[in-house]
Length: 255
Image (cartoon, rainbow, N blue to C red):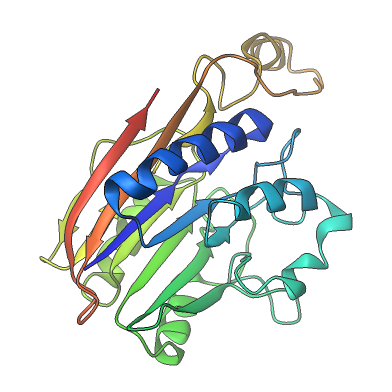
């Protein structure tokens, strides 16, 4: 069996530090084999930088991203340098980086696909067609999909679309953990959103007073990371490495 931990959107230094401490405690207790983290908000002010990437790779085996993946122009080159750093696979052809990876774990291999939704998001290539193409290329039954999307309906549709063909479809982007973890068709682990890792008493990791000002006045506001006490959101999956079937999926909220 493969014990996999997926961490929802990690926000800023606060989130990175707390995630590292939490994973450190979980690794031995849960006998974790693979840790995957969404790091597109790991830099202070959102996006990802070399410093935040290095912080994440101290405890994560694969980093996924989303709509903020190219927020920091100076970081773009790392998508071609780091094998286990992903950007959404359904960006147009020719864009730097890649959206999937297969990690060799010795007695088995484990694939990760990063996709981005198009409902209320950037009009990227069709994520469903992109998933079909990538699955034809990946020679492993153990595949986790990070679907970074706004619409719950699009995430649900992707879960059912890939049911039986991948081990898990994990939603990210909204930073709010949903209570709908399930195993689809007795095979594929699913949750609409894994949540976030960062300040709990905040607005998606941002200082609440700044988010309120933006919403109330509709004027530009520079967001900064909240310094409130952090919490950890994610999911733990137990996967049969011979067939990719999920035996259990558990929501995690650690304060």
